[in-house]
View 1 (tube, rainbow, N blue to C red):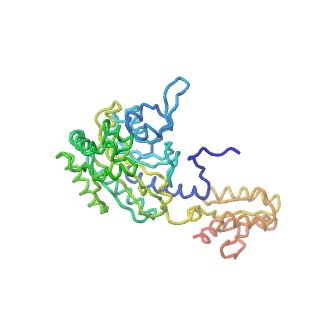
View 2: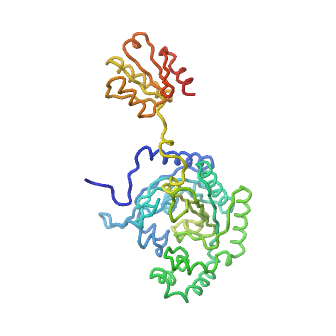
View 3: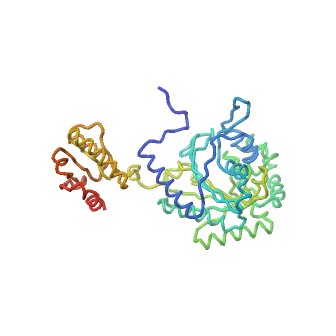
Length: 419
């Protein structure tokens, strides 16, 4: 028997209804904030991720699905979406057409990492990117938008953690402080972090090796090395969060696993649900240098991404409670009634009802059993007598009561029954 690739999972009903619920709520919220949807390819040139995510990162070094195309071009299944969004932004010269761009995306990403609860090798992300705005208020608005989404979804015990990595002018001093701190521990660090110490010591703060995490706990904090501009931006970010009414706490050693982040960083975490050892729901921040790094003009930018699998684990209620119920099930006795029910089902669907019909036919008992199976709220029964009289039998599937209704009055009777 052929099976799915390890870490790349099927999603079946009714579980898929949970996903659809999250996607609908996110899509509606983002669009109310002025974001529009972008869809980028799942495969990109490998160089895009090496230049953006960072060569000395676990994602590029260990996790990407990379292979040569037939023309020997190195291509990669996207491990994240921000780089693709910026590539599209530049390739289509969007920066020349509008000063501010707000996009959101939904779709699968791919990383060959060690699987954990809610973390798989094909995983789905929902995210937003705002390009062209430097003010800290939009950073705060994104955090507030996320906080509102999780509240709307019923996710409990959500915490917002914030930090600031500083800008290019702040980094040399902070880098020197990190090297000075970690150098005495070099021999105790894992092999990867020993190499990072020379190439990119900030990545050590993101290491998951227990001993390295213990050592990193005492490392210098980024906010102690912020220049005046970065400090003003961080203060403005916090003031805006307070204005939005979003509770948060400063986590001075918060980092993200991508080299393109600058300035604001944030994560939203939850102790609700069954998230396992990692309780992060989503994360994001500023990447003011990425557009320029990929060949465009200097462009401020900020965004976030959240793993849908992680969100699903925190939602209250079982999958069936998210699966939309069938409004009306049509049951027919006789060939003529069956053809009539097909036509009637189409009319009900065009009117906005969720209507189902068992094409296999069968006894009335079997058809009504199927109506129960699809959780129909009402059943419409048509036989030869109803067909001749231009009536239907309308049955309330919960109460069991039924009545004869003129076919012309069926829509009004359904509205009354299902209100």
